[in-house]
Image (cartoon, rainbow, N blue to C red; front, top):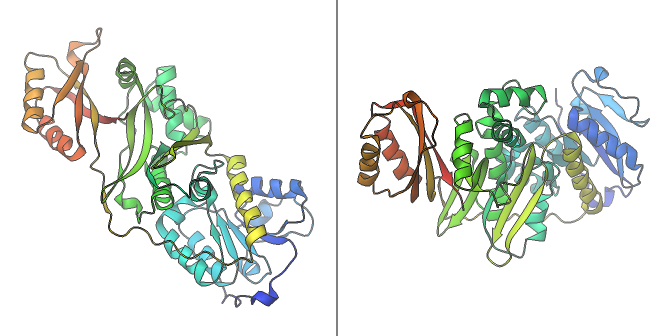
Length: 432
């Protein structure tokens, strides 16, 4: 049960001692945050409360004496802590706890990407209305300071494009398919065994995790009022080892790419597997690492890369936000930046495309495909066919000159009705 919060402290009553911190959630990241705060032994941050359900099972003897362990959130609300660190995840009850914390006069630091993606503007408005701060640097790319870099380091530029690899699980799986020459199912099983993927990995492999992070990045970098459901999202489940073989023939590899770009009055946004040149920063990231590339009108491209997940890297981002708060907790809260309101949202990128077919081989297949593409005003660039595959399930690839995604999907809907398919066609953009 949550009681009515205390009224916000007047400026004259604000404490001048260390910034008092309450941890809400003592899982992998929460424990890492506590270890950093304990090891710092500094005068600027003081851990005073740890809240967790069934808290007795979570107690750690290495946490300094004087910390109150509780499973009653009212103990946090009714305390004199300056900042609540929310590390529970999910929309509820985390959203309720964050809201009550802000109403009770406590700033909030969170690593909760789904909460910020879906309710960030609302909670930021609540924080500002109460003269408080809501910081979420750990919600995107873990230990990579990309949000701060975009807000402060590149604040003088006009960023028009952001792209990156935002999900380490997908990157690990695709790297394993490519390098170990195994199936998607085997790569997923390995990721689960190593703890990189949950038992139900849909949030990662179907793009929803990256979609939430891209939403936050687009709001930060492009000042766009984007919602997660507006981001066109595709799974990596269809990618096979043969796709990497053909991608290599094209001088590319395959990664799950999140991208958002403003052109004229349209914001294009999407998350999906894509072919990227092997010389690009996006191709060089392997395993579970993340990379984000921003493109600005004046400063050109800037690359942020590093460990995007895990308890320790994420905890570093959380503690960095806490240190900023300890220095600025009594400063005036910045006015809200209004998002660009006249942007339309679309997933209809215009790019070159890779389309892989698997067919029961017979005469006339290429002619039939070329006929459909021609009627949809799509130009064929090249046809790739590697030797050594069964004619009963023959894989080959057609690359297409740049065209709109919607036009391609209309053509593929017609192509799927043709009788020679052994498996549905797989299409991916080819990025430059």
